[in-house]
Length: 543
Image (cartoon, rainbow, N blue to C red):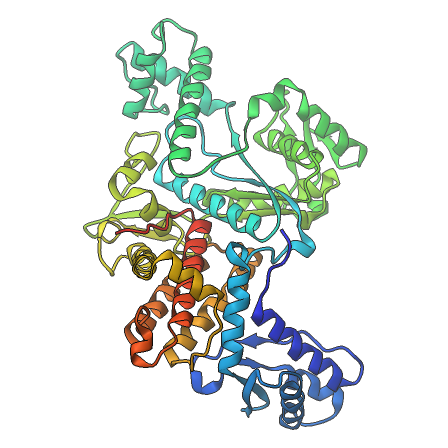
């Protein structure tokens, strides 16, 4: 995807060009270019003059005055005025003509407005997410991983990256053995082992597997995992989450990929034996202690399999690997990054993103969840309760590295107090306005010239809409889909104020430019729809 028209980026570039010209050496440091919190401080503000002042040997405010004059000269007709504020901030007040032209430019970019922001540095990225143990259905805890990983992938794709999505299935080890033993116990009408799995789903699985009461636990575990993974895939698809690949851990063992990874580590001189065990010298790469890869019994550790899996991913030729891990993996980060570097990988090409916990709140009480004990809420149950849209929006409302409380009572609300309902209703309201205008009238408006003298509510809405490319860019850089939930809600609020203050259909009757107001409505609808799509939330036209 190629970069699309971004009026704010062009304005920022013009300021940068003026700053470079003023500095005399054709260059300037990276400067801020922000939207002030209050309209009286201008539409945009920059600290460029303060950064230039030390190298120019002048006072910041004097530099700001000169920079402002140069910017006005370069942008004749596009700026109403410039003000110097505080220690040397330069505040820009844009003309109505600039806002009208910017709307035209953004509309011209169509559905791609805001996309392609990373095209110059586009990467092939593998995003591994969810990867919940295949010993039970997807729970609400894993649902947060699913919503986050999928939305992050959507945003990265929109920004221009080539994305693949993968789910790692941990289908070996003691947990799998206990799973098979639990299925067999239920098939015999017995209680599972003390450390086994007790959910009702285990009994259901036992009933689906012919001859489960007499079968070998390992075979039962294999068949049980197959059935569980089928259910996981179906649930994730229902949740609008699609993985390109389900990678099974047992293949790492069958293809001797652990041995392959150990050979690489041995060649690099990072392995040693101690007391009959094989160790990786991760302390050479900043880990707090070395790690065992093969026990004295000859058994490989989980860490050895994880290293082999990451070497498999590394050899597939991705530019970047992103792993979305659970909160209990925080202590695992250092050793994994060290192992990746020991394999020959670049440390900054492996991103380990830690998800914090999600709590369901019902009538002020938190619902406890435990997959092994069978006391948990599944993602399917959550969807049945509040729907896919509310589930995804609410699960994405907070940064992934903070604990999230999902208020089920609020999520069920069909009113403005529910943020996803509020945003979707704004989209549906715009659709109704445009239906009232008619397709022909909308097409005519989009092709017309604009003459509107902007109302403050129009200016505020346009400023918010033109910020969309920056919002996407920040969401990409910070791996922060939650920013788009806030942004979409702010757009809906600004549209509500615009619609309150500015009649759209029939605007001419009160001296307004109907073409312009229809065009603003179309642009708002597009931005809301795109923001919701990046969150995996629908944009209804009727509510």
